[in-house]
Amino acid sequence: MTLLYLAILALVQGVTEFLPVSSSGHLILLPKLLGTPDQGLALDVAVHVGTLGAVCLYFRQDVARALRGAAQLARGQLASPEAFLALCLIVATIPVMAVGLVLQLTGWIDLMRSVAVIGWAMILFGVVLYIADKRGPETRTAPGWTLRHAIIFGLWQVVALIPGTSRSGIVITGARALGYARHDAAKLSMLMSIPTILASGALLSLDVIGHADWALLRDAAIAALIAFTAALAALALMMRLLRSVSFTPYVIYRIALGLVLLGVAYG
Image 1 (cartoon, rainbow, N blue to C red):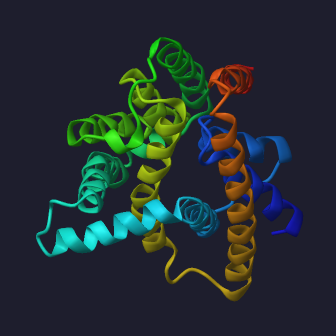
Image 2 (cartoon, rainbow, N blue to C red):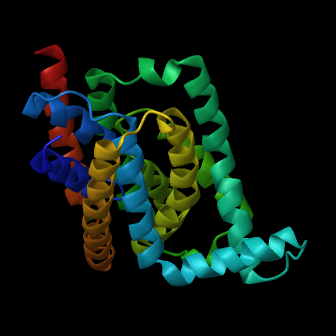
């Protein structure tokens, strides 16, 4: 695989993984635009590792708190804010892991990976995000996250198993509907992405082990590094903009891309 294609793939994945615009929609469209085959599972794992590193670095203080909390949970200590944060992240991740595993084992996940499904999901959930963002108050903050809301966020995250929905976008939608401020909604969505990406990356890695060669590992390392850099830049920009800008620009982009995908699907 050429360095140019690796760079394009990693940049697209890195930039779109945490923005509410659906990385899957972009990755489906990319090979069609460039006339190239699917990149394969090994590179999927690589770019996920890159984006995981970016979110862990950007939210390193919160990640450190969650890790301390996880250690406290393992010792049966539940009273500290760190332990509660870790518990909420675990609870919010269980639904998508359970449903995702069922879809993967039954093969239903592949049946949904069509350009038409992604196009409709981009438009529909873009509109839902717009309504939640416009109507939702900004009265809650990330430190006020409750276990009940963690369960609700986890159920919203299951919807993201529909390709084109956007994992970050649907969690932000749920958070805004519950009244979380934009910046805090995005922050909670990003923190929830860590265990989710770890779980999905581990599942993909099971299919990759034993099939990788040195050339592929080299390509994977390059893709991971570029994805890390792109994701870190995209995260920093979005979190800064959300202090003064709504999610409307992302909604407009989602609808435009959704229309393009529907044109591809039905054209």
